[in-house]
Length: 104
Image (cartoon, rainbow, N blue to C red; front, side, top):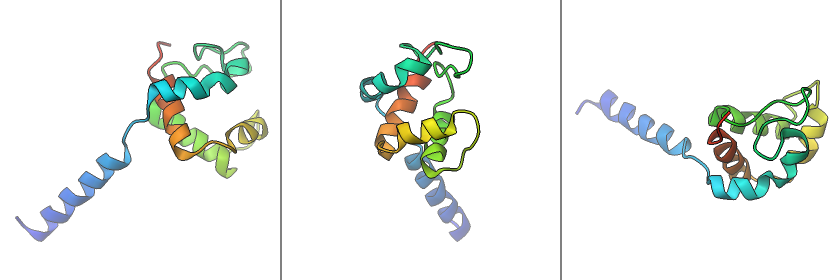
């Protein structure tokens, strides 16, 4: 195996590991704090809030991380930042897995 092919295989293996999915059951438990705005099943209670049900899991996780880091602004960003401030990376992955697995 060539050296370049070896390193490419290593990088691909790392990227697959980094994309490990969260636990939807654990995410469902954490979702209690999301219900007021995003609905009990991820379908928003008001047009002001986005539906989360069926949303792309990687996108949801990235969005939660961005809120926590203060990389999102406008709209409800300050409220979201407060909600996610106490979430771990694992919590965010679990929430993303839960909502990503819901039917839109």
